Length: 422
Image: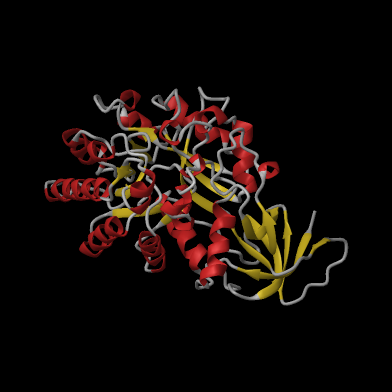
């Protein structure tokens, strides 16, 4: 059925209509017409207050629990939560009880998203069973469609093995994900090492745990590149995920200026919360990496504006109630986040009065990390995306589509609400 979206602001930076308030006619995923005003008969007309039209969101990192933890998330609830949050492209980390270690599993994950609003991108494990001992069948997994590899949602502890992973994969158009965390420094840690760890008595995780690992991985990359005999692929990237500190981000900014082939993402949680969120021992705010200081948070926003940061992650990590309803030091890390990545960012976009193109510049950069290009909203072209309305609403238990309810954004009021998907 033909639809006309009336008086909507186009927030697609690739569109020639970017920033303009227009009427947009759509039918079956195709843009029929765009004009300041459209008067068409026999069409469904959509109207609202301060509406925005933009491409679907790219989420560069969610913890995957399927198969093996269906009590925490099912395929149906995963897709429902992602769609409700406007996430159209979702990268899944190899964190399930049964890892995608065979080519058939990679293909199966990709196949599941083909007929859904949300397309899936499976990250393959670097080592068998995520044990950090023996390589997975990296080439077979890549040929099956894996364009990214990681050690679960962490960094690979073995320096020798990680160097070999870089050397083996750098002649392929793939991303090697690392989530910098020196386990020797973060062991038994609960929150950021700082003011709140002093007040609460909880063991802190120092920024050094992140920066020491970043320095190691950058040095290994430099070494591998200096011994590549000109064979490294131009599309190979070492991707640093969930960066949480100003110091860590500065190291990566300097590495980009140096010309190293790296990309960077940050968690929406780190952009919206600081260490003060755990002052009342709220286990929903127990995250890895931990929430850090207000100064770190501001540095991450600066990294988005100067394009040191290439994308966002929801860091969606479903946990059953029993794993969160414990004393803080016994509770599991993680929060769900598929439904709140976009509204949380839009809330900050308004609050901080960021440039209008901020989200979409970031979104297009994130898409390039996946090796894809988002379509432009133009007449006669196929297009898919989201329609938002600037309208206050509160995220409650009733909004949660995920099977797990461990949401750090629970009871948070947002500025934009989803009206439709196309």
